[in-house]
Image 1 (spheres, rainbow, N blue to C red):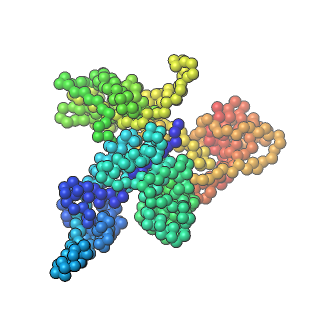
Image 2 (cartoon, one colour):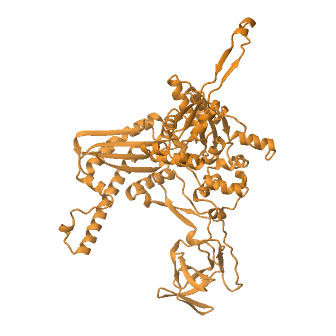
Image 3 (cartoon, rainbow, N blue to C red):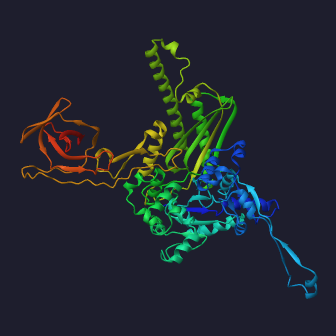
Length: 635
């Protein structure tokens, strides 16, 4: 299995690049240009999208002058040398950019002409244009299409005012002769399109983003001051490749500004003397939530490679899709299942032709009156199989309809119990969650569309040396089973257990869906505790026989209090929920305790006990309250 590799394709000064390409296409001068925001009154008159509001809020947080009036957002290099700076009010920028006339002698002319003639040169005036962040995003998304031949999964940077694309190039480099050849070919395509770019390749999205956004002027200043080794910071190169496994070393001397932390948290860290990512990553993780925001804690975990960060893919302009439409509409589950079965082979044919696989399928049902219902089904392992896709979609549709029927029945029963009305009187008008899929049983459907999310093909492996029919592939069978169960029960009901670094047994496992939800590209905050359990046997009884120290197969969600622990030393008994257990054997104590800073600290001694009835129990004594509890069963 190849190691994950990600590429960050950054377009420096992206708003100016978009403006200059547009001006060059129209034949207008594009060297002395600057972009500015609108006045608050003008802004309210224009219709704004949610993403535009996010960009504007970030600009106002970065430059408070944008709150009260038009402010410069981006400038070209020529305008920079004229004194125009980002964050400067528009009126001040206009005064700084007044053109000056300079008179000089043309030394190339004869001396007699120079006496009577003087050539005047007028410096071009800086052009100020309105900043449209939605246009910048749209052009950035359009550039994802020519880059798809290098990586099937391409996403847009989720930060405000994005200036880069994120590519998952895992397993793609050998197709181009290596990562360096892939990057050089992609950079050449970008330059032919009229844009300049820089890129970085690393093991994680966070490392690739950081390496691609290093400020060279700050790096040169740090080198000149001698605060870091001269070879520690990356040089100003268009392509940077971090060797596998070296991301942490590459990030050590970079400034905290490339960690994608909120501006308020960056200010807090700078006041504490934290200047580099190496200093930031050396801080104890349990102490960070008390000082920084949840978003910063997640970013630090991503830089530490303790939390995975995915890419929210940009939909393809020409996606893998199949459609059905007819003047004779389909009605009922059987008709819809048949149509899905007819469309999936077309999806398979397109996947095979494009040499990609499918990880998720979106199915849209269109009814008269512009009434649409959409459902999504995914698979664990990307596939090209039309049969598997058809089964998963059919099971998902059956689950949604059945779940809506059950919810409707429960709603009707609750209404009957509350009002005492008959079933026939309470049935009409009952609306429950998922009722739109219940209407598919009666409402005619005149069009069905399937859209597949394409991902790279999984790495192929040799199945068997001598036989291709008798060999059993457990991982493929498990992936198929999980995909079918997710379609039948819902992805949120098919969970996997993940061990957590927490000594408390009730917090040592975390359940999460195997199939990620549709919006899981965003990272979620996870608690990271570096606590350890201390096992300190405090009883020395040579007459006791030590039992093994595994964990019970059945762990109670809430420990049950033990009514009494009595009897003689050789014949102890416990009472739980009115039932008495006679103990025949028990282990030495296993002490589990946590620090005072945890949300629910514990201080317990656990024992494994054998009963005369043949059961093995896991009990503990709370050392704070001196009470006993039953926490699990071994059989």
